[in-house]
Length: 198
Length: 160
Image (cartoon, rainbow over all chains, first blue to last red; front, top):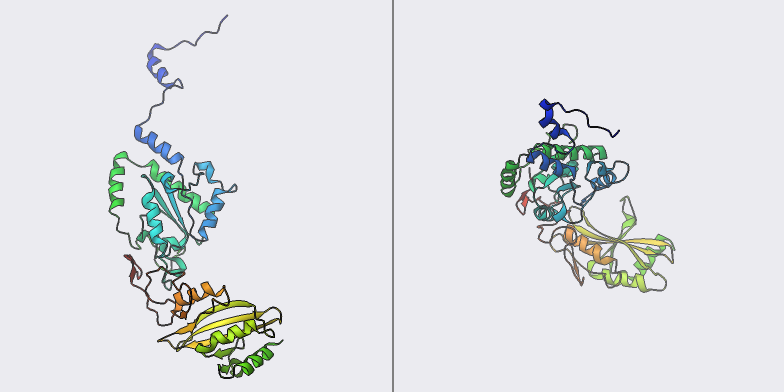
């Protein structure tokens, strides 16, 4: 005897159609955000010792690939995420700005480590160090440490993914406008002197 | 050859070029000879080319700000005679100028550019004396004791 289909309750007929592995309901926004946060491609870009920790994140032990962020791109055109890993000098700042400008929207920035967040040990006597990359480009997530452990950077990437998850499509226009008119946030994101992690 | 013998040989050859022998003072650190700026090139050339001296290697060339004067310090090595000699040229802060030794030691090129970049010492005869570390339009010489930090650079604030 050929197998017969289980009897269908006429009352649930429409609902079954929806749940039979063929149709999923979501919003465009959720779907786009899901796609976006599942493949955050960072820019291959290291400025100082924090870059060593960034490389560790890319290697097998910490393996950023597990979260879809594996492909470090060699060109800003293909990258979604800029991890500013290391001391930003005044000589380097225009280059950082240019790389940021060359990245396609939507783009995100992680400031990794004490130097990048606020000058770090070069805060007072580093005549050549930019006192926080906030002064040059807008930063989405700050990862503290000197240098941060690879787990901390992973957490930073998760925070970026959280940002992407919460994003509204129409907000994108507003964010874009904000970035276009970015004048620098000063050291607003900088912890006060004496706080741990500075 | 010991360092004292090397010093004695240089003093014997250039009695008029050596301002003083640093070993006579009470300073800590390497013994050194203070050489007149205008005779430095002659002294180094002789040290390199004389068959008895044979200082083949320029170990290090540094610029120093001693507060009152600037100085250019040369550490020269003779691998043949297994001896190091330190020469120092004291330069007035207003016009620090000394002959380049890039024609004798290729290694001096970037070292002299660095001393020029950070202390403003001019090496006459250098093939391309431009800043090596700071940006090309940087103002002032950062490692001088009287250096004043820029308040901002290209619109980026520096004194938060």
